Length: 416
Ligand SMILES: [Zn+2]
Image 1 (cartoon, rainbow, N blue to C red):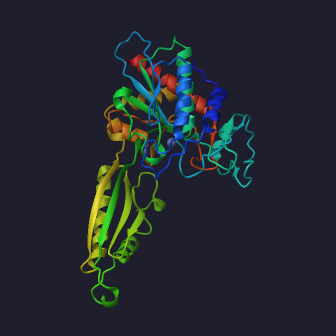
Image 2 (cartoon, rainbow, N blue to C red):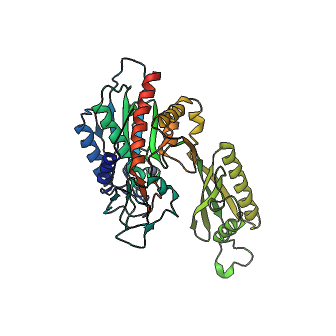
Image 3 (cartoon, protein in one colour):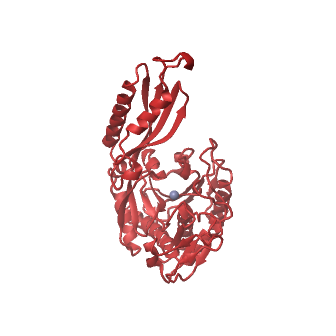
């Protein structure tokens, strides 16, 4: 029986969310915002305080640490638990004032600093499962930052458990905290050699028991349109305006399908994210998403065809279609080592929860890790309403996430 106290994990979350770690999508620096390092430094001190002697942080804001193997078995793979320290740029993360509602009673929670922000069970039915348990919210002006400090708190609490309970046998456990996940650069400067883990788990998921082993495959696509430019006073029959072609291409996209606003579950889409240009030359940038690589291919072909048909109507105009790979569905990698997900399922069950297998309509650090040598599904932490002022997390869910980590390390040792 492994027990981790919800109050202890809650205390950690409350401490971590008060440090502003918002990442900056417009920065080219690593980390994208220096302030993220404040939390990394605190985590380093806390890990060292637990007696984890090799804990380090670097100039990019990553934190690495090892809880060494304490088993006689010699061939247990090193496994990594990973969370991100940054919070989303979508909503302020400055002066977060966390509120721990210790015995949530089912009533509306009115956030005190902006009373128009009300957390209601009718909007968030999952709250029902937290009646008489602890719920943590922000105060109305900021996000909470449970994404992903609930994961950070769960990993830290599990680390403490391992250090205080040497009778619990495990192989090498690697801890990794990353900056800049929310701006898609969580793995940009990670040192996989230094990390030295064969398999990993991100703690960056939602409802208790959820386990995600599948993400989108993602590409960017850029359509560049060249018009024909002539002095506008003498342009009759000659000038072809690239901006108008760009508009016509956007208008030619299907209205009732094939977009983020019209798809769900396993459906893919294309989504124009920016248009730039002058009359002479314009570009449209798209993101293209699907769970299957073949699906991505089909989306590219369809989009090229639609755009080309529009451009054809403008004599003299030319277009170019360029694809840039962004990330790939982690499932392809995980299917080659199915035990990584199976052990996680078993650990969740040992923690007393039902497993909810889910797929993510997005990417995680884990999708990138899976393709740079560390297969890495995603485990729940309890976080809800992420990237918003109504973000919340149940404290018992975070504790269950920490228990799942402990069980998972034990399972790897048993099978090692
Ligand atoms: Zn996250």
